Image (tube, rainbow, N blue to C red; front, side, top):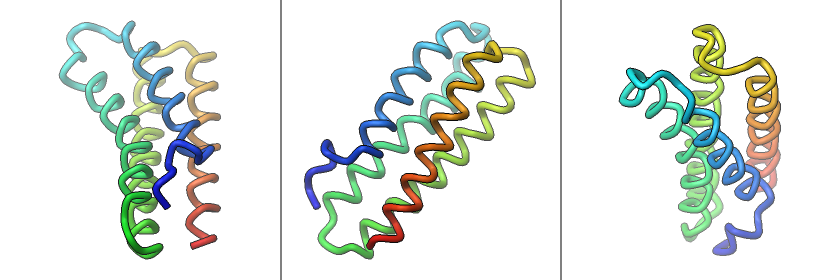
Length: 115
């Protein structure tokens, strides 16, 4: 499967990256190399691993990369909770991003089950 851009889960994950960059721009400047960088990297890892998995030759390889993407989605969710607890992100933004990452997690799990 080489058409990762057509996958809804990849599209949703790209949207999550975009929103994460926008929302994290307001984080404290001292977090630029800490939590800001970490949450951005975990967000970017989700669609990146989906795309890389699509470029592999076997469903088994693709499923492995989906597993990595899923792990990154859970890492992202953990970092999002930390941001909320530290009051780096408003409740409305947290609720929106949490809902989106849960949706992406479920989509990845369903995609894995089809392989």
